[in-house]
Image (cartoon, rainbow, N blue to C red; front, side, top):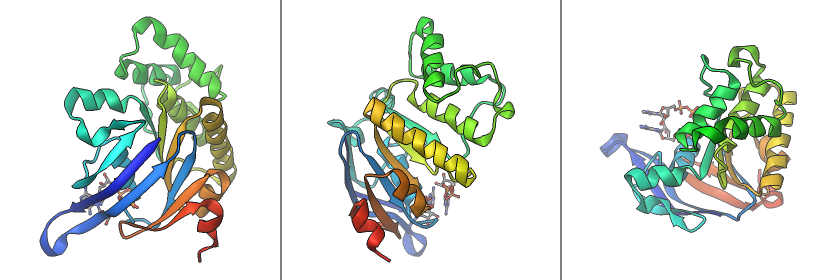
Length: 232
Ligand code: ADP
Ligand code: ADP
């Protein structure tokens, strides 16, 4: 479960200050997919980075499955972050490593013992439909396949929460659908709680249980999908 309470964040000072988060509160029940939709500059990336405290809010709290993330620092925060996986718009794969090695690298960062990494990485590549492609390098893959690796990597350390930063924005419509369907099926299979940000309402309509509309750092609409998409 993701609990964001009264988050505020301002960048800069004085007349140039930008209020990126203006009293944002969101609850995502365990196992649900929640979408935050809004234009560029609305504050979505800031919000997402606040969830695992890559960005520290000026005030407000982030609680993940009962752990007060905003109360942690240093090693304790790094350890708590391992329960959060993240998927990126531009995949962020290591070009000089095979996709198997890309996933193993994430496992190493998560302190998974060396002897378990190869099998756990292979299991994740199987989950995303890339069973026999472990030896391939990122440049040999299509955009959709790269994002499948991104998802495998995000899930490798078996997080409870998945954060998705415009995961399909660099993909064509057909590939977008297949990646969204994959996220949906993994959400169901692993009972993963998912928070995604996007500028595309179609993404929200396809896979989210609930959603919020963000403008100028604030949530202007929030609810079950049917309510949000009725607003103009
Ligand atoms: P979105 O993801 O919806 O495009 P962002 O969270 O990236 O929105 O940005 C929200 C606002 O905060 C924008 O006005 C942006 O320019 C500003 N902003 C984001 N990051 C920084 C930063 N590190 N320093 C200063 N301003 C920032
Ligand atoms: P995106 O919307 O795709 O996340 P942005 O261009 O908004 O990309 O942001 C890219 C990076 O630049 C982010 O780390 C963000 O915090 C930072 N950033 C965005 N706006 C500003 C700004 N006005 N001043 C400084 N850094 C910014």
